Image 1 (cartoon, rainbow, N blue to C red):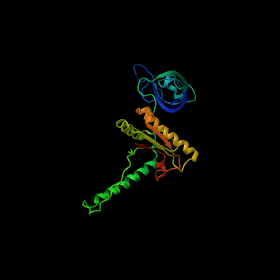
Image 2: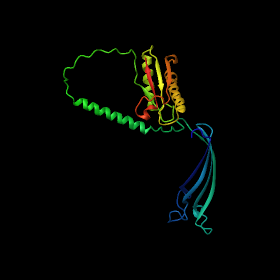
Image 3: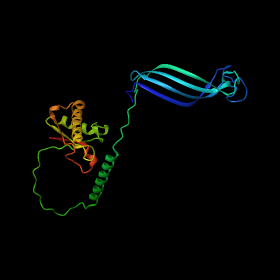
Image 4: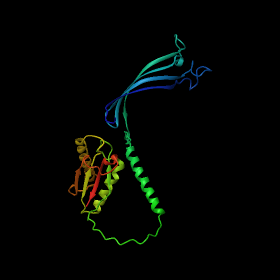
Amino acid sequence: NPDRVYSLIPYLGIGYMYGLDEDWKKPNPGGVFKDQNQTLTYNVGLINNFQLSKSVALFVELGWRVMQETFDGSGLGGDFEYDSKFTGTAGIKFGLGGKQDFTPAELMDYNLINDLNSQINRLRAENEELRLRPESCPECPEVEPTVVREEVYVPNVVFFRINSAKIDKGQQVSVYNTAEYMKANPDAKVNIVAYADAQTGTPEYNWALSEKRARAVADALTKEYGIDSNRISIDWKGDTEQPYAENDWNRVAIFFVD
């Protein structure tokens, strides 16, 4: 937790100590650790960390180490071959430059990923079917032209995690694309309509959640990309409307630009 002031960190491990003696020479021939100025250590302890800022921390370490009794050259003086000692260390830690904390990994919603993959595979199959059709088609009767409403729909959507109004990094591209379109078309306005899926939460909770989603997307357009708030309108439907057949897709905000 990057905001935690105090952390207690236990540790357990094996170490190695070497004592300087006669220019790094062993005092006694033969042997590896017994009656030598080197030994394995068996360590256990607690580190108390007090985080003062992202770059500065105080620490107090209390430890217990077990080693060969003959490490200090005193020989075997008791009933046990091993000796032990308690240690205490206090100090200040400084982080010099760079990033001093960790960014938690944001896992994608696998249900949403599976739904999107299914949709992609279906479209690929339809494209393959179209590719196999003959290039020439029989003559078709003329079709009366239809009047198209003068409305531009930008097919950008922002999907959300369950019970969340935070825009994931992977969804930021939709906000960016809409912002770029509005910068290129100064007279365009956008209406953001947000929803919540009907299979989770109560209608009252989902209504409030969809409002938060709509406002989060609008705030991203104004604060991150400088789009005038007068060009943005928002609406929210809770779970009263479900724009997609797949339940998980309805945790969404949809851009409508005219």
